[in-house]
Picture 1: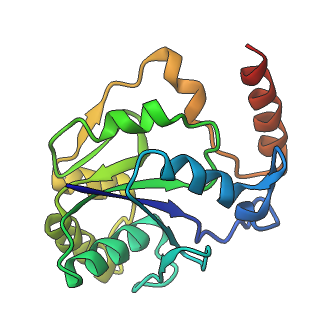
Picture 2: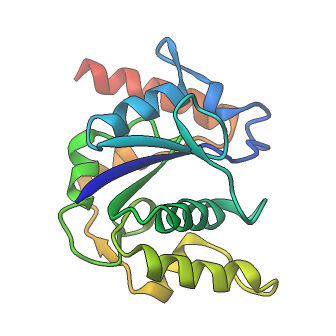
Length: 190
């Protein structure tokens, strides 16, 4: 089955006070870094939330967070009659490693993620995700979160071993970003 990787880059970056996708990560924009990681484990790379120079998919439900992005991409693929497993990676998790992302493809479930972390994730059952995401997105009183979507579809949560935890840091503030840069330098040295 085809593997499509999607970089989630549509957030407002309000706590960061500047566009996270354009932050410099060791000499390149964070969006470009995320695309390179995803490209090494997928057949195609797409970007959700912006024009990233590759295939991009706009949200159908605007300002509804990552669930809106997951819905838009999966619905788009269904409309194209594309059979694929789809990897979703947040742009602001630059410490993720390819072998960690590959593990998500090894489980046959509607959706697969790591325990305690709703993203990154692989979606294998596009119709089920579209159906349940649309219910959440259309209900103004619903909790529109990826965790809630995973609960509704019975997603598989893989164990998150201690040695992998450092990869799942994301940066939402300038202070967190500086800490992540320091952590990435320490990782490279070891």
